[in-house]
Image 1 (cartoon, rainbow, N blue to C red):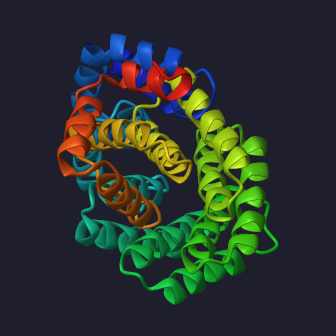
Image 2 (cartoon, rainbow, N blue to C red):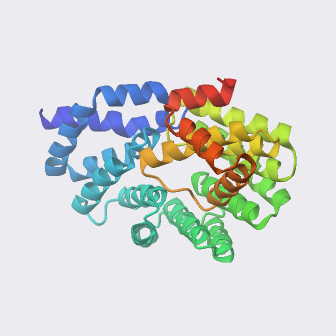
Length: 337
């Protein structure tokens, strides 16, 4: 492969990022998977001949690796591209942030913190307001995992202050998301709704259908806690239908977990156990860790369901769910079969 051919594949990978966040992500996923050998070869050539293009390529593919549940591969590409990059490359803050986010999903908070600190410092040196804001919001995510809700809120407010008066939407979207999650974790459900709906509006403006699904699922969690089970069900099913159409393996366990919690709240513990098993199985296969806003709800539903069914019956039903493929789990969640 010649360098110019590698650059063409890099341009495709870089341009895929927007498509991977949209409703037609499955077609982009199929296209990238069909070209994976060529993409790997191109990446090796560009690490040698055009390190900036290699960096953009690795950043553009971060959503792809997340979508298909192969986060270690995404981290490996970003590790190599960031290590080879010019320290003043304007793309580097984003690449470091993407790598940090992948580390966060793995539960590797040590690497996540270090990568976010580098991303933030470089973005500040380059006067990249959005880069600073998203890095601060990433730090807020880690603070949530440490149960430091005050710090998480302060970091998001700092992010919003940094982009005040700019045309930024991505940083605002990230800040509203984490502020909504923080409010939900505090039990401030009305405030959570406000932030989550703001984030939904921005996600639609940006064409980030992946974020629409994520925030619909977050709102489902809020409505369930408020006792609005019909609204919670509608939101969780909307989120799962979007993820199913997009082929988004990464989002599906969160939506299955939400539907399990709703089933338990309705007293349908057999269904809850099967959905819990399916969600846990998908997380285990991807090697990902529950984020801090999701984990307590998953664990609470698990405990309540196990008590209701009895340990033996629960384990049998949960195991049945855990052995389902993602396709079968989604079919069960959407149609009950």
